[in-house]
Length: 262
Ligand SMILES: NC(=O)c1ccc[n+]([C@@H]2O[C@H](COP(=O)([O-])OP(=O)(O)OC[C@H]3O[C@@H](n4cnc5c(N)ncnc54)[C@H](OP(=O)(O)O)[C@@H]3O)[C@@H](O)[C@H]2O)c1
Image 1 (cartoon, rainbow, N blue to C red):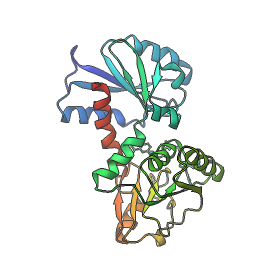
Image 2 (cartoon, helix red, strand yellow; image 1 turned 90 degrees about the vertical axis):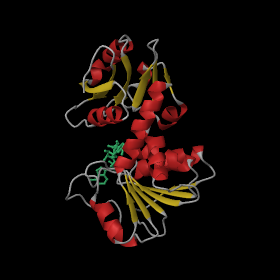
Image 3 (cartoon, rainbow, N blue to C red; image 1 turned 180 degrees about the horizontal axis):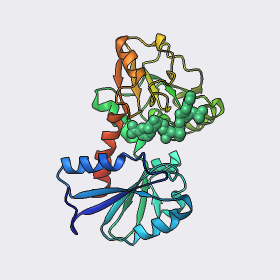
Image 4 (cartoon, rainbow, N blue to C red; image 1 turned 45 degrees about the vertical axis):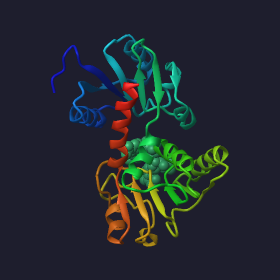
C-alpha cells in the first residue's frame, strides 16, 4: 500500500492498542475495492481523548476513525452528532469526519450483525432468538434483533442483572417483541447468538448448552478470532448452520465505505 498526499486517512482509537486488528482489516478491504484509504491504530489514553479528537477534527485528510475499548461511550460528548442507532445503543464504534471538520458518530455493530445474517440468506423476522451476553456488542445485537422483528428474544448473561437491564431496555423500545432475561438453554430457539467473549480461547467453556442445538438451529457466534469457535464446530457437527463473526465484521467494512462516502 502506498500512502501519499492524495490518500484519505482513518484511525482506530484504542487503549491498549496491541490487540487492534480492525486497521489491517480496513486496509485490506479498501485495497480490495480500489480506494485510496489508509488506516492506522492510535494509542489514546482516556485522559487524552478530548485532545486527540480535537486534533483529528483539524486534520483535513482524515475521513473518519474507528473507536474501540475503552472509548466507545466516552467519545460521545466530544462529537458533534451521533446517529439515532448509536444514541439508542449508547456507544459509538465509527466516527465520520466531514470536509468541514464535523464529527458524526455511528454504531455499525447493529446493522453489520443483521447484514451478516442476511448475506447468508437468513432473516430475523418471526424467529425465536436466544442471545448469550449483554456487554457492549450484546447491547447492539439485542436492539438489532428486536428492530429486525424477532418474535421472541431471551437474553442470558453471566451477570444476570445486566441481562435483565438489557431485556428491559429493549422491551421498552420494542413492545411488539417478547424480550426476557433467562437461562442459556438453547431449546426450541431458531437462532442462538453468542456475544460473550467465551470461545476466543480454546479452553473457554461453551456459552450455551450444545445438547439443545439441532439441525433447525442457526448459531451465530460474533467472535472474529478464531474464525470457527468450538461452539460453531460442535453446532455444525449436530447439523446446525453456523455463522462466525467475520460475517458481521465484513459487512461493517462495507458500511464504513458507505458512511465516509456520504
Ligand atoms: N464480529 C464483530 O464485528 C464484533 C463486533 C464487536 C464485538 N465482537 C466480539 O464480541 C465479543 C464481546 O465483545 P464486547 O465488546 O461486547 O465485550 P464486553 O462489553 O466486555 O462484554 C463481554 C461479554 O462476555 C461475557 N463474558 C466474558 N467473560 C465471560 C466468562 N468467563 N463467562 C461468561 N461470560 C463471560 C460478559 O459477561 P458479564 O457481563 O457477566 O461480564 C459480557 O456479556 C468479543 O469477542 C468481541 O471480539 C465482534
